[in-house]
Length: 160
Image 1 (cartoon, rainbow, N blue to C red):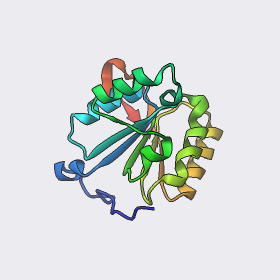
Image 2 (tube, rainbow, N blue to C red):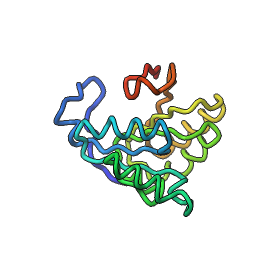
Image 3 (tube, rainbow, N blue to C red):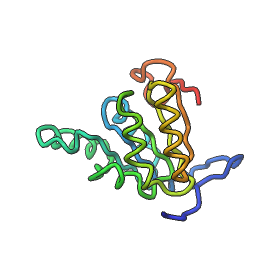
């Protein structure tokens, strides 16, 4: 596991230099993942990588990987590769895939990485995901998206 220090400790404001050193991974690059990826790219982060299961579908991978590239987001070969060295992981998969996503990435999370779960999964699925992430040394954050992401984009109201 990477032992790089987190970009900001609790209580420390995150400033522009900290943002420039932030490594972000997006798990799920559908509508929400794409919106977040494009918005985050505008903030000059150190790295933004994405993984989506559609990257593994030969009939659809070219289109979604091209969209990520056009958005300024690097397409990772696997979920594990996407989260390696990430300070912040944003999981924007379908509710049915919530636990599968956490299971796939947990072993590759760096110590102290934040794992933000944007899915509307059941409380049991959220608890299982939290247990996997926390046991791996990550910090699970359940995030409730309070309305439709479009047209709000990254400014959509969320409750942590």
